[in-house]
Length: 215
Image (cartoon, rainbow, N blue to C red):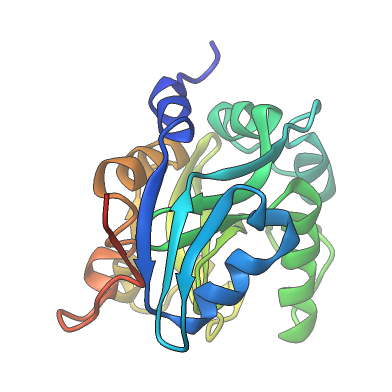
């Protein structure tokens, strides 16, 4: 049975206006791949006023098959369904979420392992955590397997190696990285909360979202 993305398709058709206050967001929205879906209404050194909606790339006919084959995993059907419709893109909310295309998920996984000098062959280390989304500050959200077809969404800070995120020594630390029980649950929460907070307990009370919705 195909996952129901009706709620998300409705969001794609909705035009929204945001006042962004984080310079890192400014540069992301000026990237040619995303600028076609977002109009910059005003800008100075401290803020950017934008109007637009999510910018999504055409779907990958084979879904996430390349990821499954490369790493010897089985991502859940809802993730496969999503990528058959949209091969990554940018979610425009109070926080910007860059959803990685299939090939970039593969490249990012191997790059992080190489930088940390961890094995990059599936037989030497389980590939049960895969980064699929980048937030404005360079950190990632990742899918982490907890059962054959149950992959939860976690915060994957660049400060931690894959082993630390897969097998945290402190159970409480591991629990605090958990964001949502599934990819679909995460996507629904992003729509319901306009993308904030992306990390719940992972954000301090004084933190604020990079953007404010005007209308």
